[in-house]
Length: 171
Image (cartoon, rainbow, N blue to C red):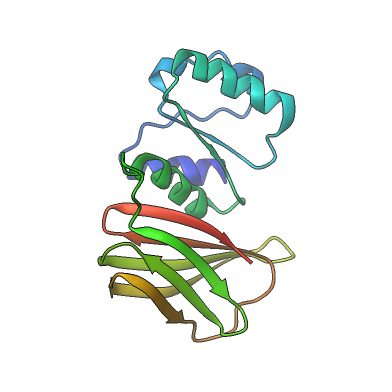
């Protein structure tokens, strides 16, 4: 998974340093790192040591905690970290999955070209992707029906609106 993530980020034009040993990660020159992405298994004191060490060298460091072992989802989380507008006014204000209506609800702060993808990690840890929508959405509440039932497991929406990416964990 780490190799696939690295290749995808490099393909997007990002310089990537991969490290699986947290002790070695603390010796990286933090001033040259803009985003630190950590898998969800990296928790506790070791996580804090890596983050604190690198942030001491670069206070502007953005830390991304991977939501799930789904490479396209982690790529989207990294893109979100680097695409957050300086004023904090996101195009996608919020997003959720309404299971009872089998639809995605997106709150838009302004009109935009939008792509919505649902990522799911099923109870057996298999990855699934369901394209939900691609096209233009207006301002306000947008209801996007899903053509088929979404299975059980962890669910995440990745929404690309113009040049912004946002990731939403949904239940």
